Amino acid sequence: MYLDYWELTSPPFESVTNRAGLYPCESHEGALFKLRYAVENQRGAAVLAGPTGVGKTMLVHLLRESLAERFTPFVHLVFPQMSGRDLLVYLAEELGAPPANPPRHTVEESVRRLEFYLKQNAALGRHAVVAIDEAQLLEDCDSLETLRLLLNFESPGRPTLTLLLAGQTGLIPALGRLPSLDERVSVKTVLRAFTAEETAAYVRHRLTAAGCKREPFTRDALEALHYLSHGVPRQINRLADLALLVGFADRLPQLAAQDVEAVSEELVALAGET
Image (cartoon, rainbow, N blue to C red; front, side, top):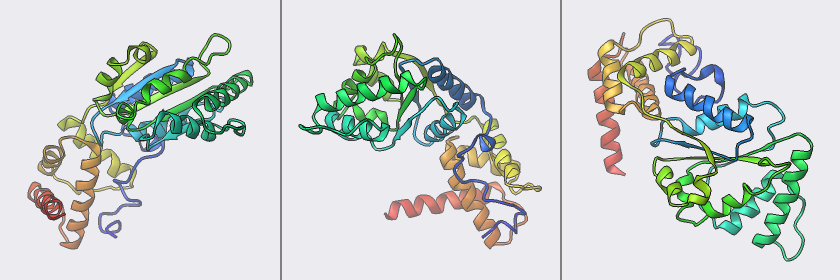
């Protein structure tokens, strides 16, 4: 709706799903490098932690895009709140394990299916990846111990898959309470929110990637964006997108701090009514 007004060729603050759109901040670049290291060196498990909205799911998508073809299949589970039994059944189906035999969907049957498939997959020169979002929820379902079973499958002498656990910062102490899994984690990386300088650079990067050749936000507006979003990319996107829409509706030549603050107050007021 506001693209022509701000001289944009595409929406600047939508989710990024490819490497070209990634803002190259130190935290995200470093995390992606470590995750690639874990997968490409066939490590058993890796952890990506950070507060809500800092880009964990985005990095999982970018990791998948950046891996060579032999790192397959790649399963991405975004709703992990299921029992250990159901989790094993789900993973066996998603990975492409052979059909189940009676008695169906027992833990033992699923483990046999997974072991058979993963060893076959490794024999073909491939390496599977299982990425689980919101992995901190697995502790409540007692499923972390179940996942550890998958790391026992080796061929020859190396894990047949890499388990990538992505979740909020509570994931790290949760793993500490399960030493048998924690000791199998070769990489732990934590994403942080943007600094004020990174927030300004991030907004400019997204605008430039969307074809913008003008400065919709003043310097004080960028400072307000950082303060009100706490440097969390998802909140920056939401606030900046709505600010551009309001600026278009009001025919503003540029967005100042008070404009961003007014949009934020409206969002807070709407949230209070729900």
